[in-house]
Every structure is written in structure tokens, then in C-alpha cells.
Length: 211
Length: 416
Image (cartoon, rainbow over all chains, first blue to last red; front, side):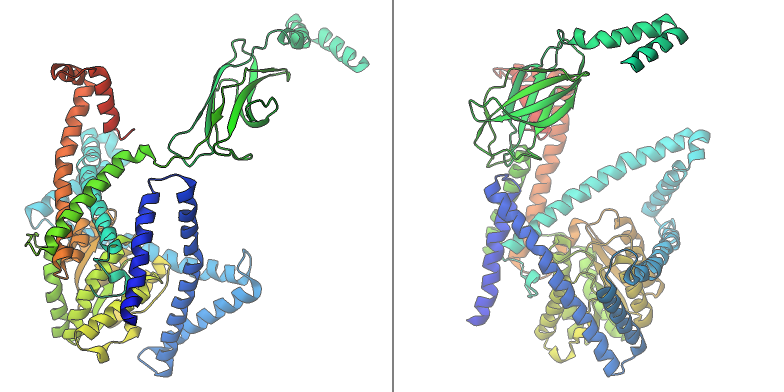
């Protein structure tokens, strides 16, 4: 009984609030918009709490790894030390511009992320190399289209060979846009369907429950 | 005074006659404009429709005399009020103002009148006649979204009809999805190789449809992994998705009767910064060398780092996303891909639940309706552009073909 109630209460709330939030999109009246905005604002403290919970979980996992001396537990020590350091400097000297926290972020995290981002250039090249091998008719069409689009986007080609630039423009404007829109329509219908299944309780995965 | 006279004399001496004429005109210009500045006229004010109230649109015809530097829009509260507050300023060429009550809020259902004050370059003013009374009011329906609402209602109707059919157990044919069919074999491959299965649920929160669909597929992968005694690793980017993923994997292990093999540390939260997440996950893939990578959900540019790292380690990769920007990379790097809507369809049919399966049919029905409506709309639009729609409506015996044609074109453009 208790377990059934534990699942039913969230679903009843989900049903009521789901229908309300869908309806508020079409109703601009303040009697509807004010509570809707208030509910959207509730997300902020909830998010803060969830991040705290997630960080606690992450720290607990690494502490367990260190205590049990699991494989590569040294990485966990580095993670825990970094977490502790950032929390300490952030709490003692604040997080505003010019503080140690801000400097650590700017001079450690940002370059590391920029390095990861720059790797994309090489990954794009290796992925393109694999994709553009003309093994089938479809792959050959893809390869030819890619060559036309790449050439068409080079400024000098526009002057030297205007038909290639026009063909590139055509491929991007028409077949590409049409295919993208078709996918987007499908995605939108799928998203509405998932939302309706969740609101009506047909799909229970959002509460971590098997269907 | 003495200084001004001296200056004028110096200018007279040093410059030509035109300069003197200019200064003379400048000196007498206030006297000229005092008799010439005409006010704006035909001031109208009306409530802005389809909003939550508190907004009034004011229009006027600009002063016929010209020489207006700016218009000040004055709002007066109450029927008989003569004093008001300046709520906006427009330049001399503008003839409308949207009063949104930025500094002085407009109360709904209260009478207001507006006057437009023309202000000349010298500061002289001329007030217009006040507008008729106007009240701001809140709407209960945004009619600009009517087309959207009708589409959602039609889709919802199809959804309910098909769910009812699903409840009756009527079999529905759904085209097999290659990537979904390959999922069980992919987990089997990991079991045979004695390596883990890796599952990334995307970068969106569990409040987003793609992540909900991904979590639905996770339950199937986790259950299969548990049955085959295979380790499953689910690194999370979103802190809200993490506990849901943990619970889904735990439930799946319980369902498979392998609760003792469930390790909560394998379903971990990593970070909420995309490239840091990519670095951490790429590291995990290189160290653990999973046999199969499942990448389902919404991803951004970091996806290519994850997928290319997976491909480099020789993992079988199955992916699906609703992100059109990342789809080319999915198709390039994954062995099997669910394109856009297939991700949602796969999540619906993965559980073999007839009600859930029937919802996929609603997509198909609605897509058929769209396939008919879009070319029809294009054809009608073209007829209207060539002026043939009116003739056609006239030929069909429609009473006022011009009005009907304009209404159809307006409806096609998604207007009221």
C-alpha cells in the first residue's frame, strides 16, 4: 500500500502539472502565467540541491576507491584533492573575478577544455576519412556531394569555377534543408509522444522505474 | 549681451553674407515656429491582443507642419483625467508606440487615454487631442498559436485512439529498427569478449524527451547485461539524470535476478562541463576498452571525441540522437544509428508493451497527414501567388472569393 502510494502521488502530480504546463503555453493570462513562472523558478533551488547531491555522490565513490585501493586509485586521490582545493579557495576567498578560484579556473580548466575542443579538428578528419570511402553507391553519392560542398565553400573556387559554388549552395539550401526539416518534424512528434506518455503514466522511466 | 554683439560683429566682418543670413534666421526661428508647430492628430489607442494584458498600442498621424524633433506619448489614467505621465518618446518621423508599462505599469481593466505631444527643436510643444478610452485586458487564449494548438489536439486525438486500440490488444505492425535489433547482439558480443558495456545517456537532463527515451533504452541494455553477467558503465553528465540512471540499472539487475552484481559506482556522475566530460569518458574508454558503446540521447560537439575514441579502441558502437547537427557524426562513427525520431520509436517499442508500441503509430498517422497537408499548402500558396486562387474559389461558387482567398493565405502562414 505504502509503495503503491509512493509511486501514485508523483504520477498524479505529474499528470496535473504536466497538463497545466502544456496548457500555459497557449494561455497568456496572468492567472495562469504567474504560477507557471513560479514553478519554473522552483527549478533553481532544486538544481542547486541536485548538484550538491551529485558532487557528494562523486566524492563518496572516489573515497571508496581510495579506501579499497581499487585499480588506478591514484586518479581518485587527484580528483578528491582538486575538489577539496577548489571548494576551499572558493569558500575562503570567493569566486569573483581576480580571486584564486577564478585564476585556477582560468589557467587550468579553460586551457584543458580548449585542448579537448581543438582535438575535434583531428577527429573530424579521421571520421571523414572513414565516411568518405566509396564502397557503395550511397557512399559514393555522399563522397561526391561532400567534395562539391567543400570545394564550393572555398572562396577562390567561387571565382574560378562558379558552377561548383552554385552546386554547393544548391546542395546546402535544398536537399540538406529538406532532410533536416523532415528529421526535425519527426523529432518534434517523438518528443510530444514521449511527453504525453510520461504525463499519462504510460512510460514510468522518468521516476527510475522499469516500464 | 555685449559679448554676443561683439561675436556677431566679428562673424560679420570675417565671413560672407550667407553666414549672417543663417544667424539671422536662427535668431528669428523661435518666433516662426511659435505660430507653425501643428500637433499630431488622429491618435488611437488599442489593447494589444493575445497577451497577458498591460500592453497598449498607440498610433497617430504625424504633424502636418513638420519641424517636430520628437513626440512624447502621455498616458492619462481615468475617464476625465487631463494630467498624465510621459510613458515614451518617439522621433519626429515615427507614428506609433507600444506602451508596455516598463516604468509605470498599466493596470488591466482600467480606463486610459493617450495624448501625443509634438516637441519642436526649440522646445515648443503642441498637444494632440486625446485618444478614445482604452483598457488593457488579459487574453485567455493566444490566437496566434491557433494552428499549433489545432495540430497538437489532432495529434493527441490520434494518440488516444491508438492507445485505446493498443489496450484492446490489436496487433500493430511497426517497421523494425536496425539499431534496436542489433542491441542484444552487441551486449552478447561484450559478454563473449569479457569486456564491459558502455552507455552514455547524452548531455541533456532527464526532463528532456531524448534523455527519457535514452533511459528507456538503458533499462533494456542493463537487463541484458545483467543476464549475461556483463559489467555496464554509465557515466553521467547531468546530475538529475544520474540518480534516475542508477535506479533504472538497479531495477534491471533486480529484474534479471542479479542484484548482487549491481555496482552503483559504475553508474557515476562525472561533471557538467561538456569537454571535461568528453575527456573523462574518453579516458574511461581507453582504459576499460568496452566491447560495445551505446550513445543514445542529445549530444553536442564533444560527441565526436567520444565516438572516435570508441572507434579507435575497436568497440562496436550503436547510437541515436535527436540533434540534427550531430547526426552526420553519428552516421559516420557508429555501426548502427537511430536517426531522430527512431530514438523515440525504439524507446517505445523496446519494452514490447502494446500501449507503448501503439503510440509510435500516432507518429506515423500524423506524418501521413503532414505529407498530404504540406504539398496541398504549397499548391494553394502557389495558386494564391499567381492570382488563381480567387478564380478557383469563384468557380466553386464561394460568396466572397477575395476574402476567402485572403483568409486561406493567412491561415497557411499560421496567422489568426
